[in-house]
Image (tube, rainbow, N blue to C red):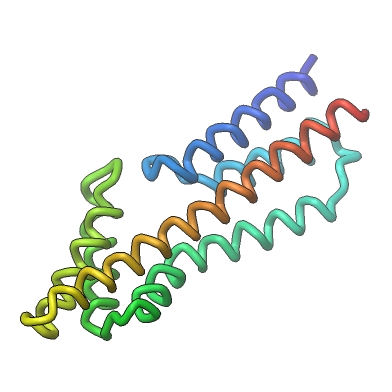
Length: 161
């Protein structure tokens, strides 16, 4: 009975974490990874530690990519150092305005940073902002795929047990 409770809570944490990859008010993959740990150590001790290590590494990679991908795609789409700094500052400020403040803050920060750099080139500012948005989409997609993989691995383990 106790083991079934931990399996249920693990699946719930993973599912809420998947929702958190899209909804910025939830911690996303960190929550899903917590569900994996709970499943391994309390739900099914026979669950392979290899999965825990792989998902731990992927969670760490996603945390890094969430901040670096938008900066890289901003630069790829013609953004300057001002746009990158503006995007970073906008993200930080936007965190105080959930649920989507950090996205709006990042995009607004890139746009305003580019306008500070060159007021006459609005097209460049829009392109840099588009790059930041695409970076956000790439990062979110990666997180969503990792979260779904966690969920499926645990489900498969439950049904094959």
